[in-house]
Length: 477
Ligand code: ZN
Ligand code: ZN
Image 1 (cartoon, protein in one colour):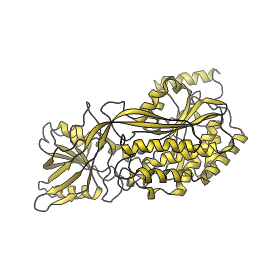
Image 2: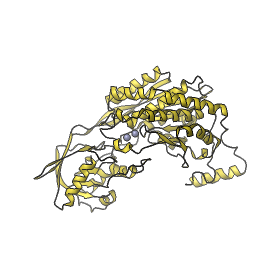
Image 3: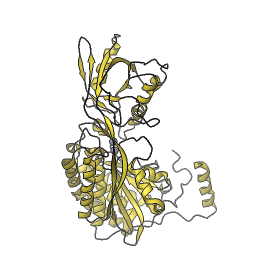
Image 4: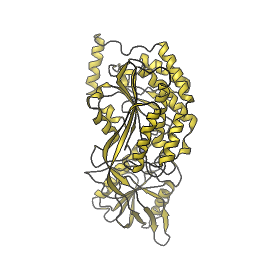
């Protein structure tokens, strides 16, 4: 389908049926974008927002009182900073609470293990004590004979995640986290444990959600810290049976979450909307500073810098603080991105573009544009504004956005991405160490500047990313 659509576009272009895409960005617009960029760099609003958010509300699990109160506060914060049409959009949610948990190796030399239950894992309903069976991959667990784990605990240790600027090592580990409990249960296991999806070597387990299969998470799942995974693997390697005791009072409950939405209404084309997304909820172990208080801080700071520029841009800039990004649901209706898409109905056609900030607050190094914008006049203007603050244009087009704006992308809204340096992100992500002191204010300011400069260019122009067609070769990497 993609190929034939592209072929069609190319032949239409060849016949002269499609005008040259995207009007050029004029020198005045670029100069204004540079001014907005530099004002944003000097602004303190992002640091103020994230300091207040993490200090006042602490952890903000989806559907919790803390997430709900933080959303109400953030709506007031938007109003106080001049946003218009500020509203809270509620949606029902199956919430999850961790309760109390513990794990230990039992026997003659008992050892405490540092674990965190995986999100939406059921509790142990008392204590589970059983022998460990170790696997080095999800594939190996899937290949275990039916019934071979009856009365046992499955342990997947796929090795330590490698630090990378783009965080590429994370994806394979999320597959283990998502599918592991169901795979273990299908072989008869009583519980599932895994080495954390994280790149640090500290005694910090990394939580994160597991997946529902047929409406349920069948057995309790836990993440071990890296040194605890080393220890358990070392014990198994000695060849003697290793028994582990697990307990957890984790449970689900009916609640609601909500999106917080606020606009900087456009001067001349207010119906044309640019969405800047991030999520308000966090995991319960830390205070959700890098994941994802930072995204709200960066996008609010950028929108505010544009609003304060003395000239309201032509199009509407909409900041959406999505609820409930982190959690799985028994059905596919539960997250904030889906609720927003349902809420706008046909207005999705007026959404010019969307972008998401959900990778901490370390510096932006690359801009990803929709396929048709690669090599366009718009791309050249964006490069001119972003290069001086260290942001290069990526050769890879941006296709999906992220979990929050993903539903918009799925409905045909073009997306952009400002890629951040994620080298240390997965040291902290989903751990008790995701706290305010991990935010580097100067790097966060560079993020705000990049968002403000880029979004100004989009907002005070008539560039139409939907009308742009990928030229032959663009996006073929
Ligand atoms: Zn996130
Ligand atoms: Zn997260």
